[in-house]
Length: 67
Image 1 (cartoon, rainbow, N blue to C red):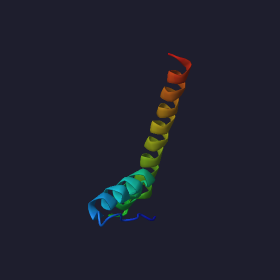
Image 2: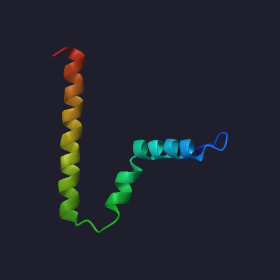
Image 3: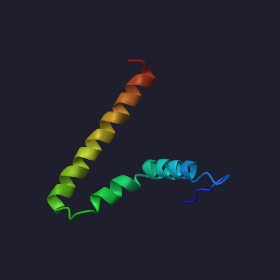
Image 4: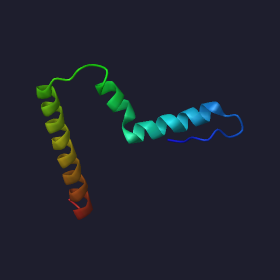
């Protein structure tokens, strides 16, 4: 990941970097790696994420169709 600093504006470059990291999901991944996650916890989390994704897709589809 590359962020250019323009006119010695380190604060602006840092904001851009944080936004890129947020978009890529790196903060979420770092948070998950802070501690060991049991396989059963991982299954539950992944199932919940899949349900969230499906609901989001359904909402988008219904909005496109005009409901």
